[in-house]
Image (cartoon, rainbow, N blue to C red):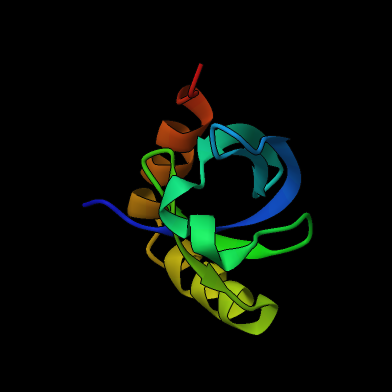
Length: 90
């Protein structure tokens, strides 16, 4: 199963290439935010992350609700966090 998990943008690392560093459950990775180029993402914004891409911008309340629900999924959540931890856009 593939999940989208909430992550908070901590830094825009390369605006031209649409790359940002996000924090997902304490794990920080650089991901592509190209799909949200028109949303004007800034540090502090929340996004739904799937396989190294920000898929949608969400608010903090939705991020927390989503995180609470995916954590209840147990192994699927752990697998998604492991996949995020091992991914990186170079």
